[in-house]
Image (cartoon, rainbow over all chains, first blue to last red):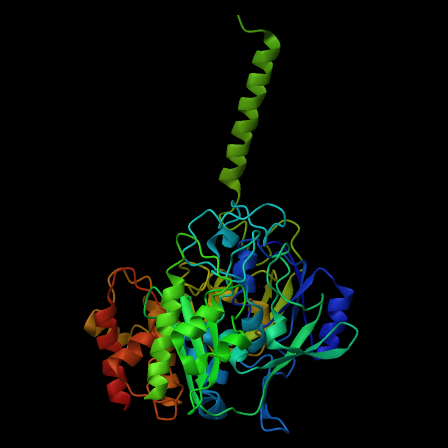
Length: 316
Length: 213
């Protein structure tokens, strides 16, 4: 790792103030992704602001019947929360499908959203990567890209977002609360948090420099039958090839978001509207703009079949 | 016939190359991940105090020091192993306030006031922890490198089941998770055994789980 200085913030305001003072800094919470990347020198902050003491580790009911999940709630604790298991089962299921027991015990809600791609060309500093080194090119586009995005990508980057949790958050229409270095707070719909790569794949979210996620809010439960189906190369502890987060209502209407296929959780209103017609119609809409490669074209039928399986299960 | 300047350049190149080789030979193996106090252009050392296996410890560390390196290099508790150093293999698993974590993916300075338990703190050669004894009895290893991580992980994993934490294979999220082989295997997937001793590891954990139930 490159040398860095370290401080522990005691409040969100203190963390924001530290971030304003040190533009070369990064926040660290669970550290399970940041330290991994710092060892590879893909991330090299000169200063770390430890936010673990910020008391953002509670899950609280909101006045409109939803849940406010503190940014520091660990993945294990969020998945195990009785209210989440009962009312937001898709979120529990997605969390439990990700990483390992050890990692879930450290990884936080906000950190999970902000984790970086697992594209092997991003991780290998000998390779060109527009996300890691803007302008250097993309080794994945003509490389071994079986795991890469089939939709929403660009000529500059075809990496996927690796999170399972974020896919469930997207289907639940969660919103993200932040505070910036000036102390100004804002709420960002989860749909708008992650950017599509376009010409600037290095800019992954709409967060400004030093802006800190303080909580993720889940709206009032929607009911319905909730599912998270993850298809991967081994039974456990692997990133998704495709995943399906779905909420299906008794009348056949519902919502669906896909993971493993795009640079962000992939959900379209027009596809949700096709839910009563079945998996083929939904997948057709979700993938209308798909541009798969030779190696990852299998993801289109795989996602459709995973969705068909979920819909069959939902019908009982 | 080669001209003198070319010979001179050639000799310099050779000398420079030899000097580089010598320098590489003398740089400590951990130059990129310095132990306490090591490193060029390192940030100021920081103090951190926590207990390890019940013993209070005060350390002065380069901020870069992972918990794993602090345990092994500063405290000489070498039971905890460095496998991949990237959170993929689980060999570095320790308990942080009773919860299992990958000690390679966290900084030691992030844990003031915590209680850390390593495999050395679970039992001793004369008084093995039941999980250690069960791994011996069931031959839950071959080379043994992943074993300390497996044992720490297994101990905390049974506590997670007891606390009612569900897993990916738990059929009913509202019901108490069961002590099935499928549950144990899923919950232990963060600990890789390259020797493939998995079936004996499951036998060892199952025996301890059964005696707890």
